[in-house]
Amino acid sequence: MKYLTTLLTASACAVVAGAGHADDRMASDMTIVSWGGAYQASQQKAYTEPYMAMHDGLSVIWDESSNEAVAKLRAMNEAGNVTWDLVDVEGPDSQRLCDEGLAMEIDDDEVLAAAPDGTSAEDDFGDSIINDCFIPQIVFSTTFGYRTDVAEWGGKTPDSLCALFDLENFPGKRSLEKRPKKNLEWALLCDGVAKADLYDVLETPEGVDRALAKLDTIKDDVIWWSSGADTPQLLADGEVVMGSTYNGRLFSVIEEQHQPVAMLWDWQVFDFDGWVIPADLPEERLARVLDFVKFATDTQRLADQAKYISYGPARASSQPLVSTHADLGIDMAPHMPTNPANQKNYLVNNIEWWADNQDDVEVRFQAWLAK
Image (cartoon, rainbow, N blue to C red; front, side, top):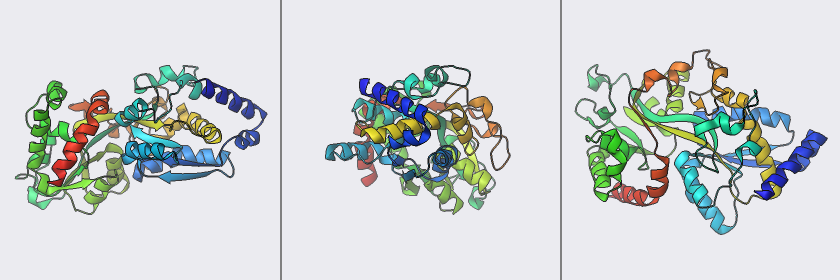
């Protein structure tokens, strides 16, 4: 932390001396890891495009490997060659990276901008600061989209998560993420486990077996996805009739692409998404990343991102600044996962449980997939 404080002080002095001198102390390129698709496009519009306009000669390279961030950062660290500068991750992955010393711990009030009214960053972000390494951006949910023109459904519309497992009334291919997280919870909910008991059941080998047995009932009808952009494309192409993905991806395919797709909010899973900075970056690369992060997570920038995609900004001070979509002009409130109308049944991702258990459960899930 002493090194970080010294670096921040040096950077602040450089900014006082002038933007050109500040850039002289920072790397001229930056590799940012994200998820691709509509979400990454919203980051580019709200964060990197205006930042690059302020910093001539800066090159930003995007890598769409966030889904594999933990494994890849482990491998880079073991090889002594970390090529990433900033990584977008979900909450549980940030906890694992922090616990393993692969992500840098930060002081939020030193690294992040205060709110316009002077409220400290720590207070403005509040509960979305979930660990010492996590730099919050958004609140999002993983939920389901479904085709609205499936002739075999006879005019019926899914109104429950458990339509996922109802092949008789809702035949057709489904798409699910090729990871256990969320799939196991949904399977147990639709096998009769109460929300309050989910993680007590999953804590046992028998509970995981029960969830996998429920997923077995639809396994032959599932297309497994690795990128958040997959399900929207599969839905648009008619290759699946329903599938899970992030709510902002579905917003894009419904409102921007005008595909015959609708959103199923039942048992959406809330999660936080944000940045982590790989540990032990060289001084010039770290200086660039810290400068960018302070800009990209300020009140206005987080509000700007919410104009392009239906994810709620993690700062309290950003939320009143979001009203309509920047291009479509539509009210964004009905499309937010945090809208009360969309919260009749929901889960909050259990970050601690998944941070402690994901590796073991992942092995069992992948072995089940391979059968």
